Image (cartoon, rainbow, N blue to C red; front, side, top):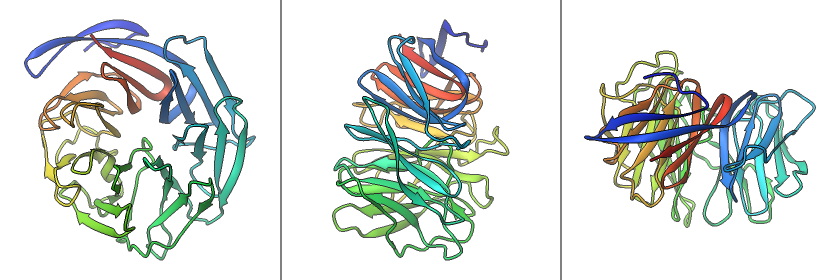
Length: 336
């Protein structure tokens, strides 16, 4: 397919029918973006060089960017509640920033000074509690920072043991997902498993997956759920991005068991997957460094709908529109 310019129409065919997709550029900047949030017509982002900001979905002149620190920090996490956005930089010390949406006033409200601190994802559950997943230390215990409904952060001892070489990827802020009753964390590396917490009982369960794993670059990079039962995970190997064996899997029992989908028949390595709101899990969008892919049958089959490069994260704006971001850009993709 041809290189997509800042605005253009691309006719693509998938699952037996043809559909037009319109791309427009919302933001161009010297920044690598791996985390997005959407609210009130704005796309919020965090990225490299301590940059944080927003751009309006419908008016690209309505935008603002600030630096969260005088230091050259890298942010790969972002989450929000009604009043604030929250971002944590990778590497130690990990600074937990809270940014007021109206004024963009930023405060460093918590800090993790552990030498091994490396926060891969930040996520809010439906009840207003936040979770941030970090790489572990020599103890190999699950490290999950939590923010309560009062806005107070802590790092409790969850007594969940990880395997040696089991970690996660700060690829798109989407290796955590939740429903009303569960929280899921997708790991990768030497082991690629699903950690599931019952949000009512706080009990943890760990489930093995058939996902590609065994090397530090392999495993699940992103996971999304629709309700308590249906979920999808994507990933692969970032050092061999054309490899497409055992890099997509779905579950219909809340993460207990996983079925590999489209092995050898997909676009390869993916960093982010998002289920279309209101679709029941049927329609799904995913991105990797080399492509944008789409499924309309619960992840069983996939079509590459664009070969746009260097996109790492995606999110549905509405049932017909997706926002995508990556190296030096934020794009809007509209299904016609």
